[in-house]
Image (cartoon, rainbow, N blue to C red; front, side, top):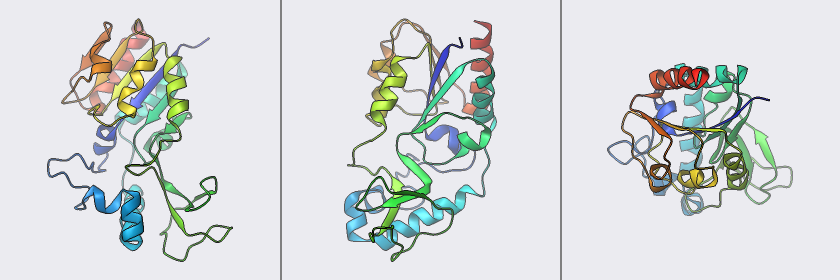
Length: 231
């Protein structure tokens, strides 16, 4: 039986492919304040702006490609039972070939009913006001906004508890509850943290079997893959 490798990825791995993160130094996400485009209040206040913002993010997806970090994770499925838990809303893991990806914060290429959360649809083109679900409600981005519950958190915690190896890639470990997932994993398993500017939070800092690779995902992840294959 293959060992279970659980991987938590954040904005850093996608940034290397050209997708900007709202945690850039200016505190903006593609020149927008988070409060104006990524909260339920923003949706109520100015849905046109929110739709326009995510239409641009969705269109940008088709201009970028997975990087070596994404491909290295997909290649690990040859030898490990790999479960990726990502904070990212892009589909770069899937396009690189990863087959088991849990999106904590939603997916850009999906939209859902604003009144029936279980009505979710694929959407590669623009989403506009007046686009309705089959029950007549306005469609909204399938994104978990700040202040909303994280529906996939329970599944992610369950996966973390099953990990034989835990890898963290490209995240500042400051956004909870995702940053706390390590508390559900066993203390005696190996942990690998890949980030050019690592910031150990309480959960990760408490692990005794921790390896920190102070590099971007495109070079750090291939190094970790060799480490765990040779362990």
